[in-house]
Every structure is written in C-alpha cells, then in structure tokens.
Length: 437
Image (cartoon, rainbow, N blue to C red; front, side, top):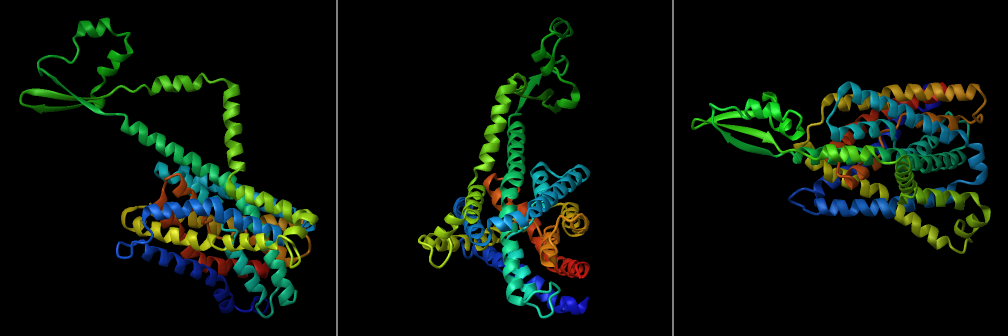
C-alpha cells in the first residue's frame, strides 16, 4: 500500500495543501473584515457575493466545461452524474435524519441538510487529483502527464455536474429554509401584548356574557386560559397581557382554497427559476459548447476565432474561489463571537461527511464496477469515490448570504468541516487507492 500510494506523509502533504490554501485565504478575509481594517464590511460582502453568484460562478462553469469535456467523454462517463446524484440523495437523507434527531433552530435546518448533501466538487478535486498523479509511483498505472490530463478532465466534469446539482437541489433547500425562517420571524413579530386594566374583584368577562357569546370566536380568544395570559399585580389592579388577534387563520384558509392549477403554476415557476439561475445557465451553455464540435472549434483552441472570449471567461472564473473564501472569512469574524452552533450539529455533519458517506461511496463504486457500469480506469473510479469524501460546498455560504439565513452559523460549520478535511481527505485518499490496486 505504501509503495503504491507513495507513502502516507507525501500523500498527507498533497491532500492537505489545497485545504490549507483555502484556510489561509479565509484568514485574510477575516482580517479584512475586522474593525481595524474595515475593508470587507457587511455591505461589501453582500455586493461581492452577488457578483460571485451572477458573474464569477457562471463563467467558471462555462469555461471549464467548454474546454475539458467532449461528446465522447459525456458518453463514456455517463455514470458520473448518477454517482453525484446518489451522493446528494444519501447526504440529504442523512441530513434530514440529523435534523429530526437533533431538532436544531429553524435557521440551521436547511443549512444542515445542505452541508450534508452538497460537496466541494470544484477546487479540491482540481488540485488533489492532478497532484496525486504527479507523485512517483502513483497507483493509476499512467504516465504523470497523461494521468494529470485525465484527472483534470474528470475533476472539471465533476465540478460542472456538482454545480448543476448544487444550484438546483441545494439552492432550493436553502431558499425554502430562508423563506420559512422569515415567515417564523414575521409571525413572532405580529404578536404584540396589550395591557388590560381590570378590577381584581371582577372577572375578565361576566359569566352571562361568556355564556351568551360562547359562539363568538373573537370573544373566546380574548378570554383565553390563564396559561396564555400574564397577570401582574400593581396598585390593587391586575394587568392582563393579551396577545393581539392575528388574521393568519384567514390567510391560511385562503392558501388552502387555491386551486390545483395555481399550485402547479407556482411549482413550475419555482422550478424554472432554479433551472435558469446564472450558475446553472453557465453550466448548460458550457456543456453545449463542449459537446458540439463546430461550437467547440469556434471558442476553444489556439486557432479558435473567439478564443479571447474563452480566455476572458476563464479569468473571471478564476476569481470565484478566492472571493468565496474571503466572504467566508469575513462572515466568520462575526460568527465566532456571537453565534452558538450546537456542537452536536457540527459533530453530526462531520460524521455524515467523513464517516458514513465515504463508506457509501465505496459500496456504490464497487457495486457499479462489479456490474460492468464503469470503464477499467482506476483513476476514474478513484474520482467517483472522492465525490463522497470531500467537504461541503463553499457555495452554501453564497446561498446563506443571498437569503439571509444562518450566515454566521454557516461560516462556523464550514470552518470546522474544512479543518477536519485536512486529515479526512488524506485518510480516505489512501484507503481508496488501496482498494483500487
């Protein structure tokens, strides 16, 4: 095992280096967001986040897919989108189980599911897989240059497919979580106590009136049980705090009376919005350019007439990861001081991402190989297994900022999961390569 994997210590350096680079950029973002520096203010982070969502991420996906994936690759790698879908479904299911067992606050529920399901299929795989190929005696049986080229193609295709899943499934989870959290806050703010001064010798409502008005819903609501009223003695009088009546019941009845056609239109509209988000649109355009030969010849290659456009998109895409990590570090400065993420929540996410999901990945890939679904390429199978062992996607931080739900908590969760990833990636990389020998 040590001979094939190049030794544990070299592999430790290879696997931990990209994580260390990301954490250093996050540390720079944390410093820029301090009061002494004052560069990454909350408004600046929000503006940068919108640019990342609308410009940098679509450019990254479009440029990567257009330049590295061809129609032949898509046909040969048909199991890769299935594998990533299984990783999302398994992680999402385990995330919902964690939410049901731990019952975290409302603003953390969608974040827990997203952190368990959405993985970083981007920069980590782009760095780790080619770096493993550069090691002497790599276990994939390919020359270093060929191995690195194949690994870069696998990682780029993984990043594009992962982006589609993230900006459809995970984006929908975070959006619904933000809407539920906002509704909960609005309902809590709509209940305002009203002080009613009454004589302590008299009842709140006479018995005759209570009997006569027993059919009136409003009067029954005012004469609520003592558990819903707070009685405070002051100067021989009783102050009874009664919540204001809300019309949410009428709104609820109106929502239930919607026709099935209106609900279908609303669902179709929401699905269309998810599928036409800027990152998803960039991935689709890049896939079309890469798989259509004449379009690829126009944009990609040294003699392509529009290669300047492709190079410009690549330059824009290169800014995605640094900006995401700067925002993560800036949010972390507030999160560490003021946010209390339950340790059990962080432990559950770490357990799902680095213990359960890698075991699921080994079982899925070995089963697919035994059934003849995979080509006999150990590097391709290694990439499929790595889909289950990488840390959560940094795009989750972008979504939490977009929908103003759990921003600081997200930074704390990402910090701990990426710290653990330095060791977890090393261990599972070694295990995967040992299995594929």
